[in-house]
Length: 107
Image (cartoon, rainbow, N blue to C red; front, side, top):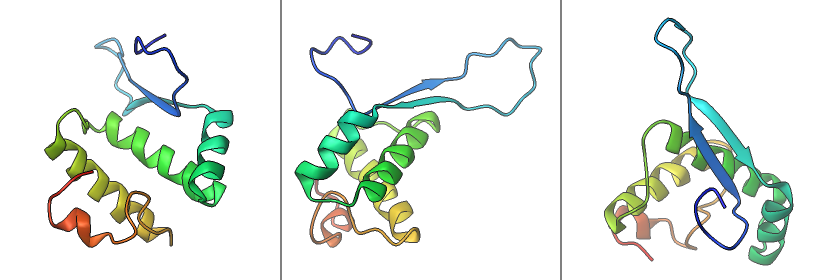
């Protein structure tokens, strides 16, 4: 409902909207739907822990100002996600060959 879509989503990010006198370095909240993430991991043949890590990274990138509204934005965000996941030992979640992302193509 929040995004005006008639289906559940895996992750939502809500940027912090703090009063001016609050000086905490908070980016916001990330809400992850466990049943959706579990179903997606099973459907996509991914380890559940890898998909959870991916959703957390995805949500965090949104809080940092990244988006995927255009093909170029999506490609950039996917590359950042893939790089972050690689530091955790997980493969590219989008393509069998992560070089696809380096070429600047999406889909």
